[in-house]
Length: 197
Image (cartoon, rainbow, N blue to C red; front, side, top):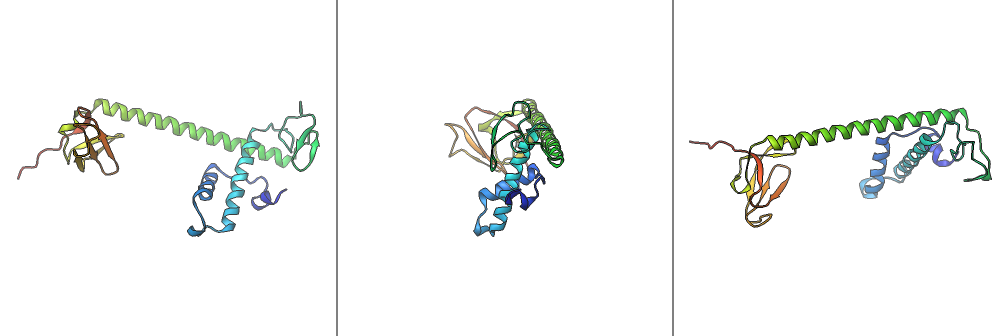
């Protein structure tokens, strides 16, 4: 077992979230953020363990303990630290670790696919809401109106016609974003009623 695996435990597989957090810290944190050398080492160990986990998840249950190759067709292969050699029987611990890794990857894949399906359904609902919503030309929109943006009705804070997206168009500022529209563009909009004193 290498020093890297000893820090985490040889088959202590990290989750995708662990990997993502560690990768983010490695990319964006530094000494100015209070990020110590020990934290840096621990995050590198987590990233390495995540990649080992994914290799283990795709290795056959009875694959070589050094390279993961199935016994049939293994022949003489180069093994890091061992040189050329034949198939090495995996330990029971490694077989169990491969099963756990396979289940973790399958669960993460299923969760990812479910998230993607939910996202596609949400985007489709936005499109349907925009098709069903009342529209008005961008030239007629004023502050206080409500514009449909990504399925949410948002109040127009300001309309900038001095910096148009195209001649005759306008930039509409909402709470979280500014959107430029060309002239004549029909925007899903709800008119706020005039306030009469």
